[in-house]
Picture 1 (cartoon, protein in one colour):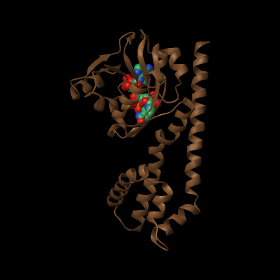
Picture 2 (cartoon, rainbow, N blue to C red):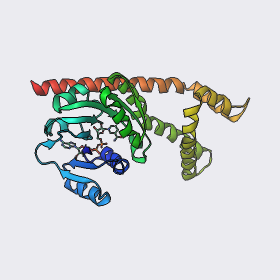
Picture 3 (cartoon, helix red, strand yellow):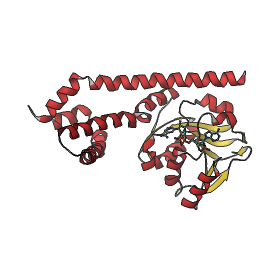
Length: 261
Ligand SMILES: NC(=O)c1ccc[n+]([C@@H]2O[C@H](COP(=O)([O-])OP(=O)(O)OC[C@H]3O[C@@H](n4cnc5c(N)ncnc54)[C@H](OP(=O)(O)O)[C@@H]3O)[C@@H](O)[C@H]2O)c1
């Protein structure tokens, strides 16, 4: 049995793929959302938060906002605490919730299509179970430190927003040249779909070489991207998001310390 605490977007993205392989319990404070979920997925158990949440011996997926840690109370010791909370370290989790094993999980918004690129880290004893569980919402990569989770977050957690900016530029480009917006968007969506197996199997430079012919259209387009230093821009984008992830972690740590004084 898996207990999900929270009923927001991420909890909803998890329920649909997990409900078939696991007994699922969803614990949250919004009764209307819980009723909707029960109607949609009769097999799950829904429970309104009422006093201390019993986590004893359970596998818990914490899927609330970080501020919930200030108000939620728990009783017992969870078997595994999986936390999807961005910027909340295992130290902070340990201070607030008792568990035998702690795992931090960083999914992305594609979880709702079971296409999340999810990174995980935490107690090795729970690694296999964690990877198996989150493979249900897409692909997983286990990293060996929270620092690496922050780097991965700067790529894959934030990545859908970066790619949305790239997609917007491509769509606008198509429209500027004469396509309808709907057609241009459909073409860009197909491009992203087809790119996924390519990048999984082929080095970026080889894809570029394969797609360019001398004095052709692609090389002309690539020259513009190089003039605007798109590669450097993307690299700096990740570095800046990583710095911000570290700063948020520090802010959360300081807040916890202040709350305890
Ligand atoms: N969405 C993503 O793509 C994504 C990706 C990676 C990580 N995350 C992480 O996933 C977590 C949830 O994100 P989300 O997108 O699902 O947010 P969301 O849609 O806003 O849902 C937040 C959930 O947290 C609950 N909550 C907030 N404060 C609470 C409190 N004081 N006590 C009890 N429950 C409380 C909300 O309950 P109410 O409905 O009653 O307010 C709701 O169920 C966040 O920590 C975020 O960092 C999200």
